[in-house]
Length: 42
Image 1 (cartoon, helix red, strand yellow):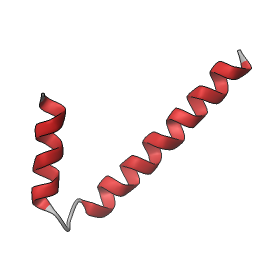
Image 2 (cartoon, rainbow, N blue to C red; image 1 turned 120 degrees about the horizontal axis):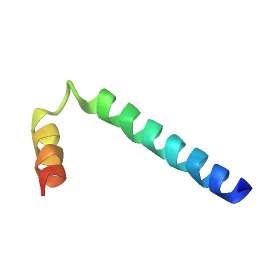
Image 3 (cartoon, helix red, strand yellow; image 1 turned 60 degrees about the vertical axis):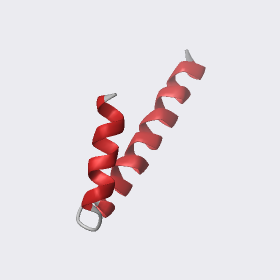
């Protein structure tokens, strides 16, 4: 149970870091955003 909890915490931290990077790059690279959307839609 503790291992599962630590895994969830690590996952949340990773998601938070990725979201922070997306927000930082959101206004500076429209092409990057479209490329990311294209990858997600696959």
